[in-house]
Image (cartoon, rainbow, N blue to C red; front, side):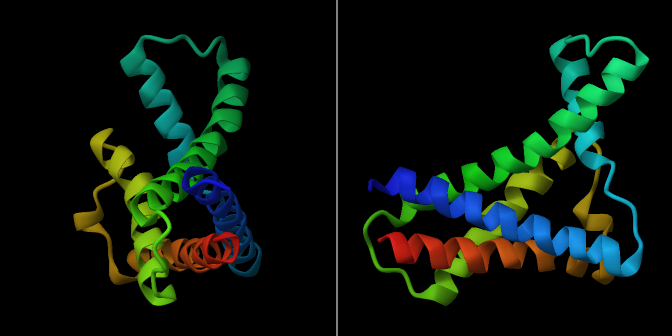
Length: 149
């Protein structure tokens, strides 16, 4: 299996772990889902001049496309890691940190560029709530990548 495919598979597994941690957090704390994925879709459609349709269809499209952005981020972070790590044996803590950071940057940087969030304004609690699911991503993605090597 080539390094890009290993990265994609690891990214898919990591994304599943991130989603599980996120949904468990929502269930335990009774908090709503984040609206930033849908806001990202809306903002990107505006920038691209794309019409999402009338009210209900537009909302449904945003609800469908928002999570796809997260999947793309997870797969992209895994693929990027695969290209960077290649066939080298990277120590698990380093691989976990690298994948965690790639996933966090992949999700926060575009939303920051779109003006939807500003990590400089986040509280410690905000950073923890963002870091924990991304750490789950990093742990699982690093483990899967290593297992496929």
